[in-house]
Length: 430
Image 1 (cartoon, rainbow, N blue to C red):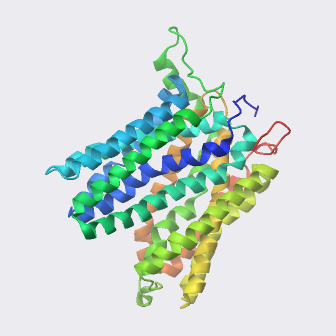
Image 2 (image 1 turned 135 degrees about the vertical axis):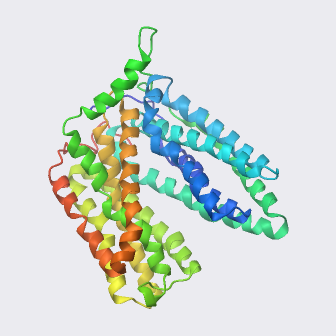
Image 3 (image 1 turned 180 degrees about the horizontal axis):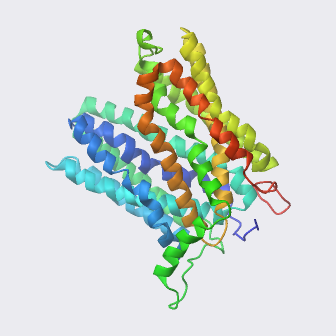
């Protein structure tokens, strides 16, 4: 893993804002749009079908990731996509008051989804070009934290603002105002990153001459990824490492909300919002930041096993809650804090391993392919977790989730990772 030359721009000036900007459009398209359409009177069936389609660009983004590698700098893609997202936000804002607002806003949401997925590819590639290996490990927790903060801002603060505006005006006016505010915010991101993002010497398109063949390079990208040494083990890790988490995030909130008569804890919506919106967010952020700091000190290989164990501890948390049914909100909040801290800490290994396996000429598109497997690893378990929980009940379901960590033990045991990957060296900067 050789160090690649970058300019001297301080990462603190752009990593946080870049990933905050990356998280907002995803949250708006996948989460806030559902709330907005519900407020505007759209049926659940239509919301489910059409917002489900909006997820497509993130699922298939590896298909056009080679284009990001082959043409233009990653920095240029980032700036361009942020400008297009801003236009999409403006389009949503102007469309909401119109009679055909549903289809018009969907069109602009899809534009945002495609631009956001493309922005993800470019930003993740730029992160690896703009930072050396140690810095990548050091800032892993920072980027994760600000991405999650963007989702919280969108799903929490913006919805609260919309609710307050609804009290003094109409629902369409309230949401149009919210999206206009977001338009201004993204134009500010566009301008800020245009001037602040560094210009790494190694951030350049792979195709630089008329003799290069784009189609050949496009297919070469995928071929090289699947020709990596021990690719079967790599894919198994990407699909299995988060197996427990993928099942739990689907069932955790229903468990907390369901009454005790059917095995739940009977929390109110306000209590659940507080637990995940404050206690959970703080714990998740601390876990991610500590994970990044420790990995940058001792390397990924040193912390892989502790992080793998950590990401499976939440199963034990929910086994405890489902068998004891504590009535104390303090105890429940503490357990959720442990759950979220372990997720933040454990996920660090997953992110760093993706960075580790994609080193090379096509790192941007290869990272996008890896994130495609990551999306698949979360989607497949969620498809059956609901029905499985209804079949087994909460107690047995959480025991099952713990059992599903067993395949991961064998996979992690056989991973081959350079002990020096992620460690700070004399040439590394924070």
